[in-house]
Image (cartoon, rainbow, N blue to C red; front, side, top):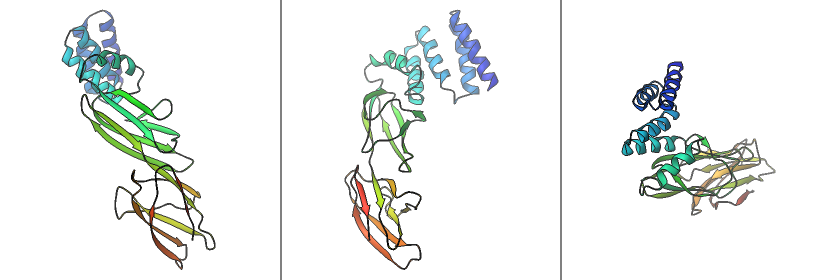
Length: 231
């Protein structure tokens, strides 16, 4: 990592002196040493721009934007690419209930949802909605082609455990893995649960701890609602 930082520093110095060929060598060296550092992608794009290598510039700028859609230099890169038709894509992020945090490709999304028609690089996106209050970690994924658009929607609801006399616990079928049950535990009486956008029926099993009372149900839980479970 120290060698990569040194290459980055040398590349920036060469770029400042308009020694773009030398800068390119240093940035490529640094990127080879530390491919997880997206700053090299941005600098490579800027250097290829100075060398009037438009296609190379676009490739590295898009790679940077894919890794850092909300990075410090993301808006500047977006501006560079926005005027070139078919270079970027459009992403909308929505949720049926408020997320305490939203992450996209490992970056915290600033502001609240919905985020509509964001200009992003084409490629694969992995998004996470976190709610500590409702113990929810909901992942959604999408792939967008250049010039295309996509929406990531976190469809989730709250399941309220009102099983009393006797106290009971709930297991619910995962909407995207038919037959796989998810135990909601007893750490909180209200738990966030990802559900299908069309509210299709899911299998639910409720039981008390000794197993003397067990019921299997078919339930329809719609995104955004609080679904109360009682005996």
